[in-house]
Length: 129
Image 1: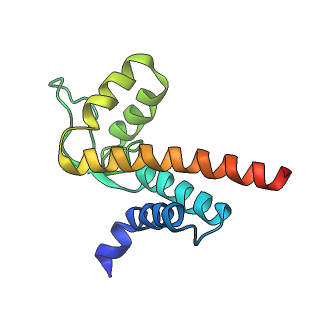
Image 2: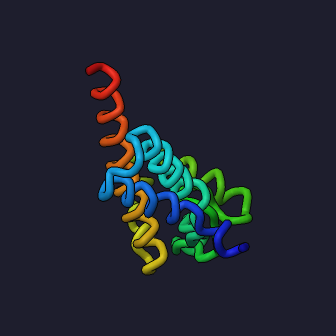
């Protein structure tokens, strides 16, 4: 049960894709599942920290989500600050592909964003029609 709770965002993303393919879910349900998968990938997925250490290397401590750092307080602030700085995006991008686990999380997050935008547009078009 603990493993399921740790990786629930991937299940939400899989259900959203299943909804797109089979048309069994409404666009609102797909939107909710996609937004949940994006939130999971940004704030809850198990990844490496990736903050810059004093030795100018990426931190390898376990972290939750792309936007949050590890247990070190300075790393949490550093990751949030990197989100708003132009050169920080280069560092964040380098850390998104450091291992297969991070790569899967990155691809899942990007696909969930695309799914959420498409489901939002489909919901708006359906509501206006």
